Image (cartoon, rainbow, N blue to C red; front, top):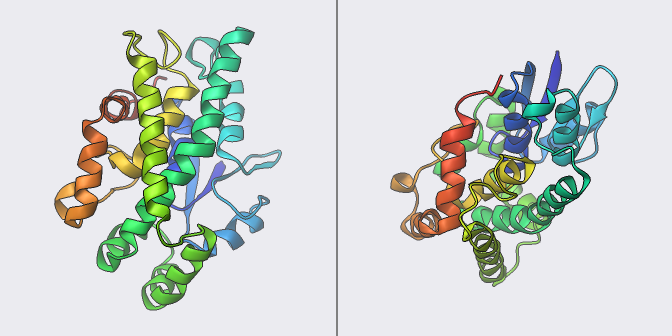
Length: 252
């Protein structure tokens, strides 16, 4: 069986989970906490990041590469990447944009918010991880915070830059949809839609997700206000609609 190495709350990992589950491709998820995930990823044959999909032939260590691998094994009419070269390039460009901008900036922005909410993080972060890893992050919290601040390059004022970057991406998506198209690249749901929805999860915090996420009613007021603003944005509403309409049920 396929193995998927993850940090359970990670939006890049959600991207891989969604791709696998929408076509009912069986896999076993192996969940790890931040920091320890590096060792798990390397042990599985990947690099230092997750997700890593372990297949019978090789380990695939990037979420976009995982989408491509799954798509190659999906019936043509259900694939996330169009067969036509120009349409495929358009989808690929959007995926790369979201991977490079929305994903990292949204992740860091939400980590900055959540690192001040220790009890809430411990309640949701450790879903399904080994018990010893949960204990490690609980009792080693100051070390985990230091690790994350270093890894994510968290520094004074960066959250303002990240929030502006996230809203630029939401505005960009809203502009694409303003002509009435049902999806980002036209009539059909593609990898661009799946990637956008997955990576926007850091700020829209969808109720439908691979693991439970803290909803606005339990978040600190400042964080809840950020989430509500994102949800009210036209692109945020679109992301939530994608989760509600496409994440719940497989297509096969």
